[in-house]
Image 1 (cartoon, rainbow, N blue to C red):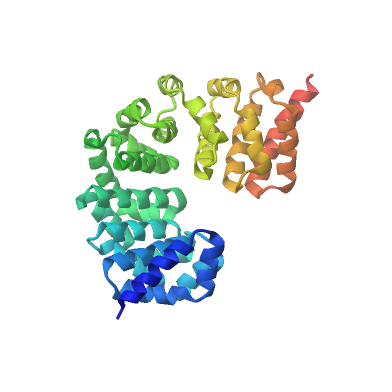
Image 2: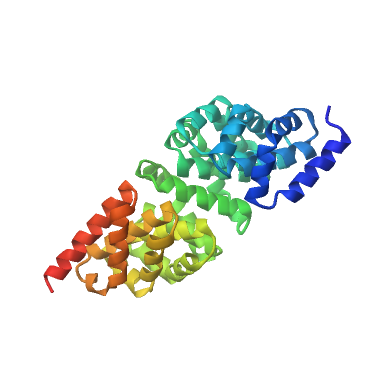
Length: 356
């Protein structure tokens, strides 16, 4: 039985857990089995606090994740998705999205019945439940081909289409943002694009590009270009001042915003007309900064964008020497994918130098 004093302890822990160091100390003190006990035996209020901790632990490091897996917590976290309590659904969805989606973890998520539950929440849940489901769809589509495929097999695109059709009623809501993000994540993969076009998503994304906030415009721009890379789309993107927003996000503190800005620029830079516009938008120095100090995904996208710019012989000479130096460092020390793009970019740069 969970007593009243346990509630006090949970709230004290939540107040203390303000840093990764504090969270690590809580894990090291053996808190995970106790938190699982809270999940199984307490009321919704205390269970939601325990789930919040689980999500924090899953976002920390491999040791914390391993402790949760060894304690058999994934089934307990997933079971909270089947609760009728929004707080539990929210914390469970957030925790699962923090899980490193390795093959083993994908199997655990499948076995726990998460995939059909996501579809069910999107089909028949209220707006809060739909929002949690969209968050998981976004996460799985971005990070797990296997779970994305399972969701599509289970009918998630039909549920998504229904939400797109009724989206005018939810403009500027969290659900609207979740829809845009989910479409963006799905549109990254060519295998999904024909289905998304059949769902008439382009008008929805165009409206989001016109009426959305800055974050919505960035994701809508990325999805729209993936689905319809046309002159008409380009004009819409630049009319919405998307490059200025991307530049702002590259300069910002939010890691996810910087990563998505770099990815969107990498996708846009494949087009020759966009390349000149990107160069004129003064983002090359910001992409170069990601080569020197960005996280892995940010660096990967920045290298891809710069390689595409250097492919264009009309603008190669405009790329500064410090960018070439940073690309050389990535070619020497980056991941395999980064080395490939950096070597490609350096080949183009060397070609330009030979013709000078």
